[in-house]
Length: 144
Image 1 (cartoon, rainbow, N blue to C red):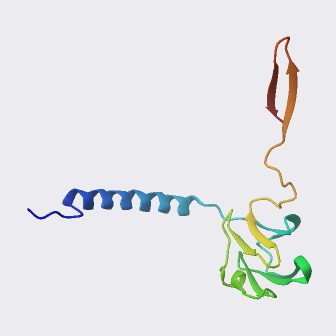
Image 2: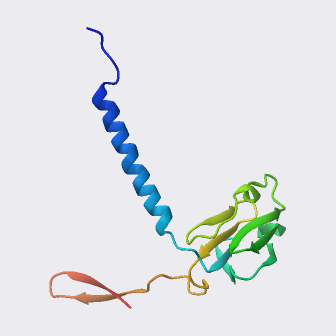
Image 3: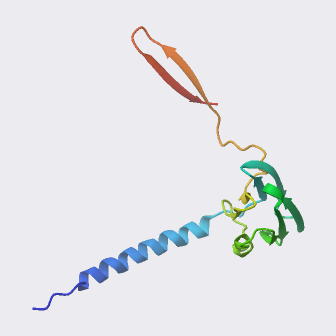
C-alpha cells in the first residue's frame, strides 16, 4: 500500500479552515469604520490632525529635515512625495479606514486614520491608589 502525504480528510480540513478564515476576513473588512481625521506624528510626537473631508495637500517637515507631502482627496489620504531614499511610503497606497496607517521610517512620519481629531492621545487614564494593611500592601487600580 502506498503512503500518501495528504489524504482525503486532510483536504476537507484545509478547505474548512480556509472557509472559516475567509469568513472572518470578510467580516473584518465589512465592519471596519471609515475614519474622519488624519493624525500626523513626527518622531513619536503628535504633530496635528486634518479632516478627511477637506481635499488639500500638506507639506510635513519630518525628522532631520525630511519632507513628505500628504494629499487628502475624496476621503482618502496618501503620501505623494517624500525625500526619503527608498520612497516606500509613497507606494503604501491610499488609506481611509480607522486604524490604517502610512509610515515613512527615514523621516519618522506616521500618518494614521482616526475617528476623532487626535488631540487626546490617551484611550483611558488609570490612577493608582495605594492602601497598606497591617501585614502587606495592596494596590487597587481604578479607571477615571
